[in-house]
Image (cartoon, rainbow over all chains, first blue to last red; front, top):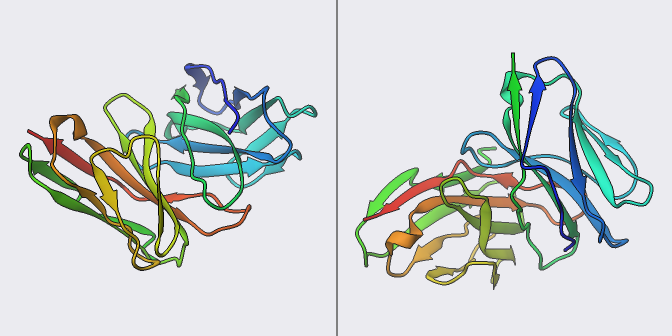
Length: 111
Length: 113
């Protein structure tokens, strides 16, 4: 699976959009970009994933650059409850594999 | 659906003792995984399974055994507990296919003294 690079920490004001970047410059054509988050020692929570098109769901939006070498997770209106560690994971979707987590970005949302 | 259920939630073991951490899911998910998370650290993959009867090692398998006799259950066995195995253990599951993310349990907090 391709290596990802995320900033160790970010701050965001409550109500503002949180834009979390992820660099995956060695991504290959069949690798998906997944985002998970972990809120204060709870089990990680799946947020969103995509291959090359931008994706949106009720939690967030995922913007993948045209060359697929980087992506941005957008929380449109961050709340205090969005304070968490956010993990960007790039992997091939095939049988016989499992998620490998990196260090992630600690997002702190403040009022 | 109860989702992914892990038991016990908390456990204290003495060095050298053995125990089994239970993980059960009622979503008929074929893929299941075990992770450990040490204080202030990220998650590391211990073992995983892509279906009943099929298991494989992850990043840190030493000191742990798994088996998968049913789709629902994926127990993790500590053979001889060591203080270095003090950690929070998470189990996760998902269906096969490209459109799904993993569902994680709430974790088992294990202390080995």
